[in-house]
Length: 194
Image 1 (cartoon, rainbow, N blue to C red):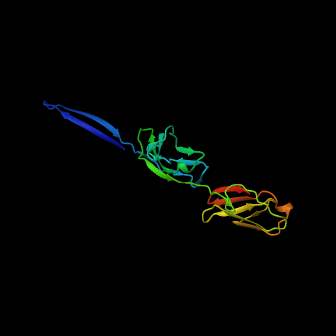
Image 2 (image 1 turned 30 degrees about the vertical axis):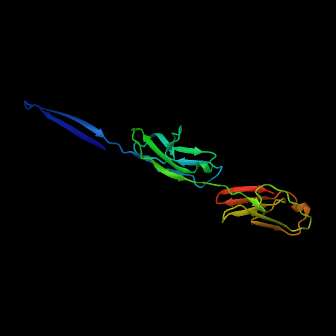
């Protein structure tokens, strides 16, 4: 707000002089950082400062990670693309408005979700398995945390949503080819061919 101050001076002869000045005390801006959670390993991390108050015109943002200033980042958003689990941490932001007033630093803790590592029959690498026509085929998917979902894409284009894929009396024309296991944990998805 605006405050008016008056200074009155009287000399030894009884003469009085006055001077008046007004002082404007501006409100500091505030920030409320947030990010586009959940973010999976390899996805795009976007942290927004969400500035308000102050003059309403914001000139400079200062971003930190773990208390260390991130050089060259002065905009209202901080984007890391692609992000990985090494980008986990505490990010802070301050903003300066057009009056030169600066907010207090506010932080947000960012967690990048690791991707599931699919396994087929306990193997995390593409492997070749042979069966004879008429055999029963069983492939066991794994690699997801509790609550993960599993989906198989079969060579004939069909899908089965189960961790354990069983095909009875397999015929070569329908079931020979690549089997793709997709493991989903929340919004994070990984696939493995077999």
